[in-house]
Image (cartoon, rainbow, N blue to C red; front, side, top):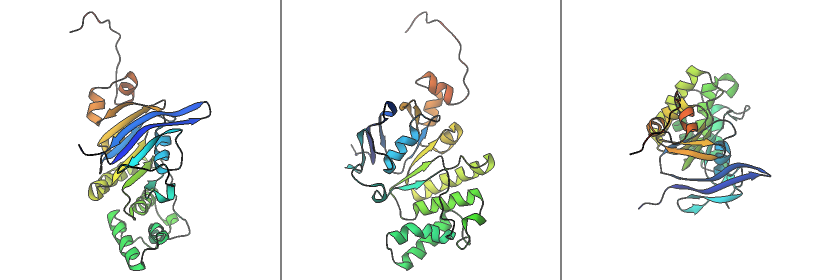
Length: 250
């Protein structure tokens, strides 16, 4: 049996008396699009930040290709990250923003220039390399942020509610772009959202978070058709609940 590409093992995070994440365990396949879905405060973003190295778990482990990541600082994990706010450098052009992580890695200029061109083509922003972020729409800025996160070919891309600041029409447009880019690059994506429609549209599998634990883990159709808990039934789709008495079991 092949070892999972990314393993989350018994992750727990406590902030004093408050437990934000309780013993989360998941296996993620290489190239998978996995979404952490849940309401605010359910532990999904905290789990993502532990993967990124921005938070240390109280206990548990994260393994990539069988090797623990916990002793590796965030800037050396080689994991891409896209945030809700675009976090672009306002004084740099689009091309310079995309090139920044490559310059930090001291790659040759010719290689950087070629990669920037490739990333602009990937996110369909050819010809925008000299613009400043302030000259672009929110959707365009988020595509630049995505290009920058993918520029150094990370094995894993983390996305923390990247579309929540966009209006509905633009959000749906960028969802389509994210799905296309995932299919084209085959990068492993872990995606955080509280939007069930977004999760169902984008994901190969979904982990539904509630109060720091994963209530259910599976494909969108599995969660919709066979919810394991009342919370999942309420959170995925539109549900009606009728009181009943069990008179017999088979």
